[in-house]
Figure 1 (tube, rainbow, N blue to C red):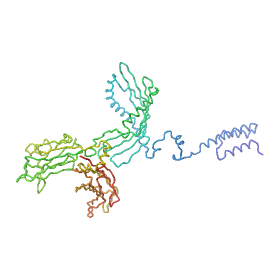
Figure 2: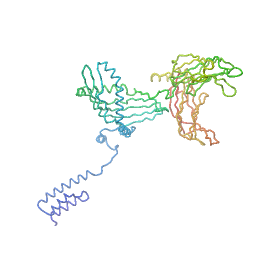
Figure 3: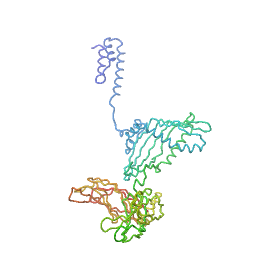
Figure 4: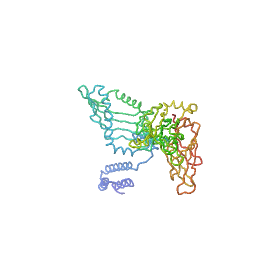
Length: 561
């Protein structure tokens, strides 16, 4: 039978096999116990066993962790794991924006200074206005910094719409360390107010609308809050925390939340114009009615006979033009013809009138011209003009003063489109559209956005033809594309409503110069009844093409003049 010390060493060795190797202290204790075989053996055995127990517990705790998906955890486990669950976890349609937070962190030192500078500039008019009103000698910012901690975006939702706009909803929080100190002097006394520990949590909806092909590619920014914001802060006055006064903290919190929500909570918005909305969107805002009455004492251009004059009118920077009838063999023609042209921006656009002598052979000879700005016109008030014709619009050209080219007499009336006051009016007007609208004229605008999956058998160089009331308009040709994008707008000035009409839209492919056969082929077509356009004022949809797997996106707008 082995000695007692040997048996102890054997037991310890068995317990430690496959789990934890004995460290130097344990080995020393065991060896001492074996060598001495003394009466202190039981005490040493207890110490060794206790040390081994601790080692085994540590080894158990240091095992590989069990990895689970967040969806497998219950609500209590999630709360213990995440003190604040971000929106991209709770709502799958919110995206993580770590890249934006990283960008904001890097740019914050410069952005913070720019914001503070802007705040000082914006606050100064209010300080000057209300400071004297309440008999204050001066109000100054002793310190204005937003701190070193930037706002954090906890998630962002982006909406996919068919309109010419981008809508996204960022949710952010700001728990910074700002230092804002305002010094107020009145009646020979000075008091300082310090704003500290500012926290703000909010979800906003930001819309970049009227996407246009000019930098920065949108005409305005529309901002609104989706719920009441959470705003918390400390306010120190004369060294004491004013917000510690019982009842004041809750009152201030509720007041701020209610006032901010009253001004900016959806559907109320804050609009920030970037570029002129109408000129950027190229949408008509009204029509100009031009009545060509007569011309007098026109300059004779032919050797034999007098002249066969006619008048061509158009708005500057517009392709749409109108032409009067030709009056034969006269230098004092009478027309009394009325034309209407759509106006995008009455502040910057001008009417161009050109008088030509009709020629049977060769180019028609220009007899004179004149340009009239629309900015001087008053809405729905006719204005008469009798202006001398000139050779060109260059004021320094001596040819304009050498000889008289005659006068032209005409009348202009600008009529702005009627705007709907509210949704109730829109609904009422839509309901009665079939009765009242057909008696009113206006402008029908069609924007050809893009097409998808259009492919020809012999070539794919798509363009779009629009057919309406016998008139045809065409887009540009996009070469070698099955998903072309045009973003072109066309308009028709109408004397009555097109509620009973339809628009024929056809996608065609034009052969390339190298292709001697198959000059043109159809890639699909669609006929669109315009009743919904008249009733709803505008529609923006994708239409399935007939005889084609493709689709085309069109935006149609009807504006009453």
